[in-house]
Image 1 (tube, rainbow, N blue to C red):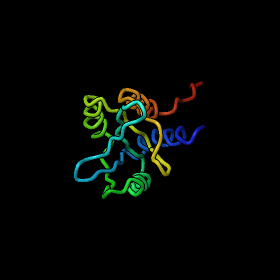
Image 2: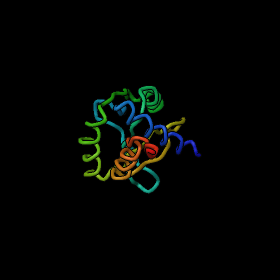
Image 3: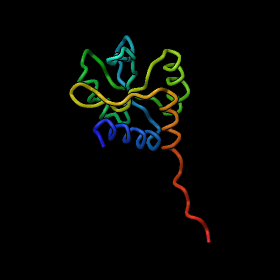
Length: 123
């Protein structure tokens, strides 16, 4: 599995368990960098440590903060979809790179990750 794949897997494992999403911001809001084709992604992280590292890498007075999973799902994600933004997932490394998903893909992956494990059939 690639580093970005491992980071995405960690996001969809950690967030449903901890019920919290982390992001970075300054007085202007959160950064939403463009990728090579011009599409903007709004990045989020699954732990405070990951978001703290991102704030340090980007610098420029950014700080990390969090919000409950339900607030993120019901408020931030629909707003990002309206703005045409992708959702960056656990970007890492010295240049903060990783996978981005559409809002629908993000929600689908969260639903799949939050399902309880299937039970063995009863005898």
